[in-house]
Length: 123
Image 1 (cartoon, rainbow, N blue to C red):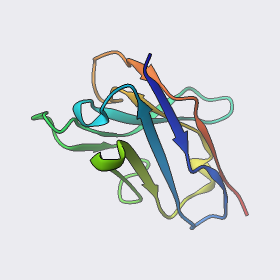
Image 2 (cartoon, one colour):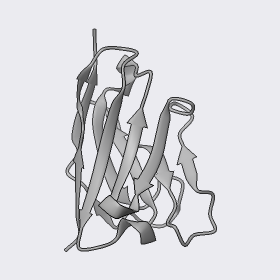
Image 3 (cartoon, helix red, strand yellow):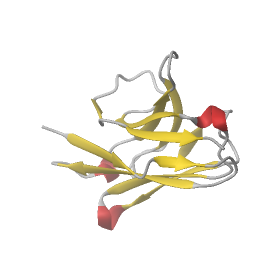
Image 4 (spheres, rainbow, N blue to C red):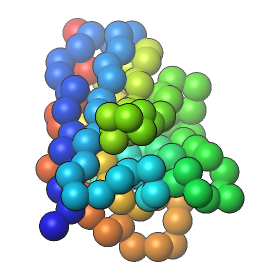
């Protein structure tokens, strides 16, 4: 059974940065599109970013308008890890962040979810 594990969340002040990690067991993340989603209290889960599989002809990355220019997604094949670098964080970025096999901008269903990591941006 595929397991995705997120880490790297925490409490930061506005303007600071965090780097989230998503590690998988039982499969190589290189061959899957990996997405990041978030869910704030009282709100629906929303897509944040996605990185295409290394074999895909799709655009390599996707970002939601709310995070463009501040967040960056990448992968480290040697560590079988996908990262979400989050800079210039704002209070409205506060949410539980989830990685998933699948992309927010794709009609294909999400195949697996991680358990989530809490990000809190507050002064």
